[in-house]
Image 1: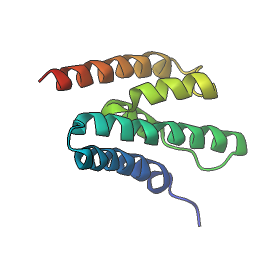
Image 2: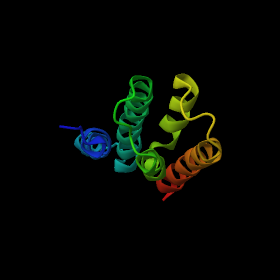
Image 3: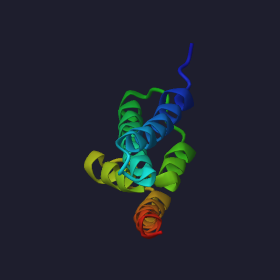
Image 4: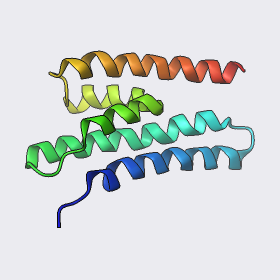
Length: 116
C-alpha cells in the first residue's frame, strides 16, 4: 500500500504546532503564539527533509501545497532554513520568492502578536 504523504507529513507538523501551544500554556508565562511558532517550525523542517530524501529515492513526495501551507501558518523560517541547508527546491522560482517572503511575514506577525 502506498504511503499517504499528508498523513505522514502535514498532520505531524501541525500536531507539533499544537503541542508547542500546549507546552507554552503549561509554563504559564510563555505566550501561546510563541509556542505555535516554535512547534510549527520544528515540524516544518523535518517535512522538507522527508521530501528531499524521497526525491533522492524516487519515493512518495510531499505535495508542494503542503510545503507552502506550512510556511503560511508560521513555518516560514524553518522552510527557508531547510531550503538553504538541504539545498532543496532552490531552482523553483515560486519557492525562491514565496518562502523568504512568508518567513518575513511570519516574523512580522509574531512581533505584532507579541506587541498586543
